Amino acid sequence: MIAWFRRPAAALLAVALGAATVLPWPVTTSAESNGGTRIMPLGDSITDGFALPGGYRVALWRSLADAGHLVDFVGSGYNGPAELVDHDHEGHPGRRIDEIDAGVAGWIGSASPRTVLLHIGTNDMVQNRDPANAPARLSALIDRITAAAPEAELFVATIIPLADPVLEARAAAYNAAIPGVVRSRAAAGRRVHLVDMHAAVTVADLADGVHPGRAGYDRMAAAWHAALSSVPGSAGGPAALRPARAGGAVRRLCPPPVPA
Image (cartoon, rainbow, N blue to C red; front, side, top):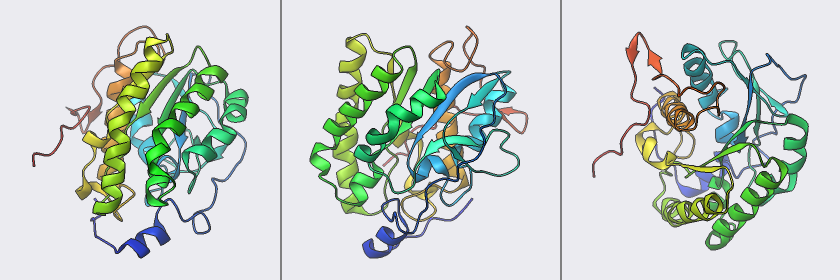
């Protein structure tokens, strides 16, 4: 596990998702495809895998494969270690909700995902980009995704914790609005599902106060896996997913919140 350490706000801004000049866009190369169910990991540097190449995608791929599911990660980005069989993703370091919104229709049109895993909004909090209206921007992004891929299952996550109390207060207000945003879209017949990622990851799981270390990314993977298991077909096949396994033992799919 990468140890969490606290940095002052200025240092956080230098290394966090908001530092677009420090964190490059993902490398684009020829896509990998195995003919499996097309899943698009969509978001910022947490999806890209800052602090740990591949991020949650490494453990998620492994757990889905262990459960007997053939999946094809899709997206214009490409990175991760050799153990990650499929390196494609749509994680864009430094990007805010509005910036993902600006490109998502094209990315979805190119990749035709069956399922989208969305974790976005951390940069809006770190950059203090009108956080009060971040839920409205998320609503617009969800509408754009569901319009571009009306038959796809869209899993919308609350954002993971932030170590800095000021940033975490912004995140808490944003996260509190997300269930209502998702409910309203689901009530309108859209295939939108809520994933409580904030409850799955703790501040102790962060590598730099913003991005997870290995343990945090593994917890994110387990939460995504549990969410996929609740929607048959979202990871291929009509049956619900079996529990993810690690080291031969059944692993808890969504870690509970740490008691106060």
